[in-house]
Length: 382
Image (cartoon, rainbow, N blue to C red; front, side, top):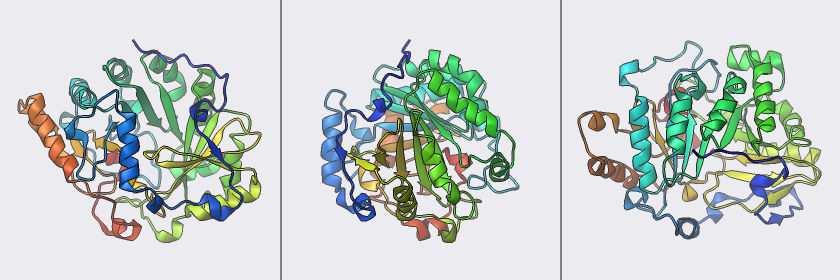
């Protein structure tokens, strides 16, 4: 069994192998993704996978290697976040139509044997699934898997995390959009702020480094807390990740609610002028930064204003067994149906390969995405 026993000896452990680039002004910190060509991204990906060859099944028509699979374990959630679902909720897929534990493990094994080396468990809220520990144990034992991660709202994580770590969970992202308890209840339509904060502290105590905290920035709701979130990184190995508000069915997205990366960055620079850019890997979705004197780090995920499609190495397996090659694209293909009809591994690989080859060079852009029919985030998986 693979177990994670990392110590908190190095607050910047997750970034210590990168070179640091001093940024002298706000304008120099904003690097457009057009500077990342497909060719340079692919070259870096090929170098990364020399010792773990990737099947052609995972290579799209632009040469991108897809080594990262996000698996949604459930559509159920114990929160009702405003950017994730409409206030009336969403219709959930009947349980018999969701992937079973054995189906998840079989499909994951197929991806890993073909070259996927990182799996992230999502939802809904993945920790509400009763067999999550067993799923983690089986996935962590897949030969070739280097990292098993989870994205969670943290409501029940504190009490489950010790066992999850024993079962091979390597890294954690915790979603938290406000540090104000009353605002938390407004944004999520539920109580539980103190439990999320406890989960962050528990993860640190158990040696997770960094503990990533995802914050979706929304104008008029939490954009006044940006510097407060950065303060979390001063004394703890936390990587705060500011995420641009993205459009999905039912979340009433409006461009006026979007706080673009440049604006968030301007606020951070004014409050923390020693911020420095880290040289990121071409497949990295975030722009990563350090701040002098801070134990943790700060990152920005700029899906709307500066997309990172040229270096995308991500694929998604939804809770109902549908396979999705782009978060913002409406196209999906079922792996559950052929699996339950007796398809062997080669037949499944062919279906996956065809879908991957149809992946577009980039998403349509935020205004077009907002007009495109897509599922709510709770169905897709965060």
